[in-house]
Image 1 (spheres, rainbow, N blue to C red):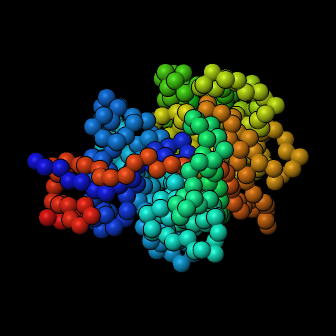
Image 2 (image 1 turned 135 degrees about the vertical axis):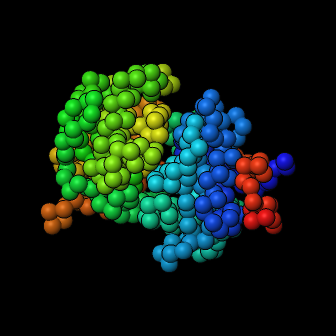
Length: 401
């Protein structure tokens, strides 16, 4: 059977890659999106390599983004994120990808979805409505002869070379997944985890829901490398069990069985104090240069570079007095100072504005810088046999046969 082709752009956003579609090139019935995305990315692949698609075998490069005109008056574009599982035929829309968020404003400008006024000068400001979390992200970046600027001096951990900075401002990020910054109402909780026992955790929901555990409570130092963790079946099983119990406690899932079907949120990670460590590159970092050490897991994989949304959640958690992250973080002399988080690929610096009002914690906003680049544009081909009942129409858009 023949193949169908869809217009698409392949982009890097921060430490992630994704296939990016125009919303109007996809079927209106979103129930038909899953099979298209799975076919385009090359999932499911029991070998874990996605050689028959655009994916790269790990969660950070197994992604799809969809961009279109905004459905909200306070935003310029709509952006939907899809996390495609590597070995399973599953697509998860429960969370946002902060790294790919950095590419959405430039994509919208370069594709003509959003027009930058002449009065704006060299800087573009695009208000992005992430449909996964119902949150607004403001992207600021420079323009170069009518297109988003690419060349610049910013380096980010996990990406070789330099690029033009994109400042991402997550406005009112609390409750992105559950509707509450502290889903249980508590700064810390004790979870009784099968196979682990009772653990003190902090469950925080800012940009993406995350459960934080002390590294020491898992018998870890906190500086372990992803391959070592993934090769430790006992630790991976414990982290997976913690995630399932936390999912129910946070109200994301009704029970463990339902939680197991939601692959992305909550993210689960462990934190420790600032300490000397070796990076994936073999370089070393010093404890004096960081405020907190963190490792994160989602979709059954340990992240080589912390997802931006989770980095934001970590910084917010570190500003909430008494939380597991706050207890591990270096004491701050300035509550508004950015937090330097050590992770396997380097150091992330995240600004988090967190305040207590009427006895309740509130996250006002979080911000950080990323780089992005369009890698290629053209068509993505999918086997027609995988999307039966659909045919290509104008601009490659798929519609019912």
